[in-house]
Length: 114
Image 1: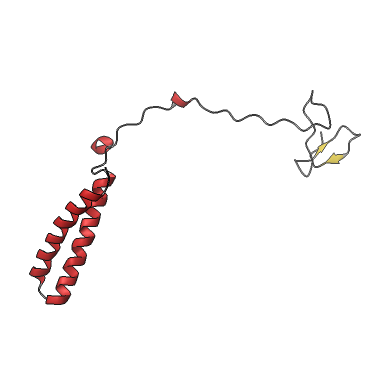
Image 2: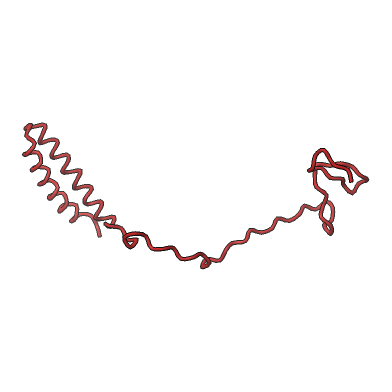
């Protein structure tokens, strides 16, 4: 048997001509493309169960609560910064920010749908 310089080239069935395609498998008629093997999916229930996430896998806050607290924090920050710029007193700015936080949380709790 002779070694070919290019392993992907094979002798075809047409009198020893070298082609760039592999010769068809036995039993496959010439001139037809081989059919692709269909992709096999694993069954849905075949995966092993995942261990529970730390903390029980439940979020600490629901999305609504997180949004209400975020908006309250933004309102408090804005009020504290504006108060500090107006009066140059940090204690007054913090008190104004705390009051704004409480009022904003109550306001957003009332208007954001459950």
